[in-house]
Image (cartoon, rainbow, N blue to C red; front, side, top):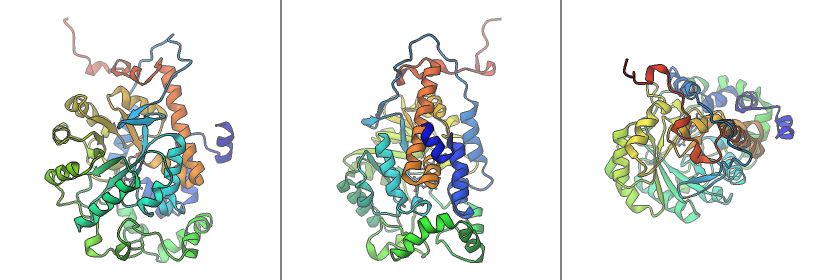
Length: 396
Ligand SMILES: Cc1cc2nc3c(=O)[nH]c(=O)nc-3n(C[C@H](O)[C@H](O)[C@H](O)COP(=O)(O)O)c2cc1C
């Protein structure tokens, strides 16, 4: 780890974020880093993790603390999966594949985004445990064809994202020319040219190969470059998605089925009733509804509603290994991380993602040791410090 820290000059995810900021054009950095509107939800997510305090157990021989466990019926070296993130192919050349390879090397699952810039089959060649995340295109048959390809290529779980029914408001993307389609103009040309390392390592390679990265999972005539307007039937369109349609998808998918982007216990109940294997308590990393609750605020009620009938994962705001321990103490089976691996990807390609995952794992194992937890089951609710305001008043 020390050698790697020296190579990247980074000692934590915050340092990797700064390295990503230096490498990427500002518009692209903001595209991956920022939230929606006034970014209150993003702040709230991170603050909610920071607020949790633990009461460590001592003198418990933690010399062999074991961070390994199971997520969705398969092994995970520690309780984290790499979240689906569209746009990774703009961060690094073939970024989706680099993320997948790094996750495989780290022994954690990787969720392929349906908005990835490489075909699902190409990404699956990375090996490891792969899940496929689904957004729906206007022409539903296109989405179902991709789901079938993902299954054939070896994806074990289908993750349907529910929290972007309409396009969220991210004003900086429009200001920076990083909206969809991506437009090159006077404003961002200067931004791009002032980041020659990115331009050479990423954009020039695509241009030499004959074009810009594309929405690669659409069938060929529709797989438009990120600089082109999508054909109407190939636009992402989640506004008409309903529970009935999700139930049909559940019934048609033979593997594990996950609903991502729930915050409410009644929605979690409904998801369990239609037979999901997992729920991701998520607000899309603060990139969707800016006035949404922080995911850690929503988590305990969802965990209570699900009551062990499905796995509850949580994301949005994981920046430290200790955040994973906090999520488990609050009842989650594990976490997803989106931006942390992307910062690593920008900072150092596949090695950078591996480093980001190493850092999170090392911090998690250290937190286990410092809390007296020898395995994941010992990261329980008994570790949570409750503020005096939360403690019911006893008899006076
Ligand atoms: C650049 C970027 C692209 C994303 N693309 C997708 C996507 O294609 N599908 C999806 O379900 N979620 C997407 N997300 C949300 C992540 O899966 C995840 O919920 C979120 O990043 C978690 O918060 P964190 O970044 O604080 O870890 C994206 C997030 C980012 C930052």
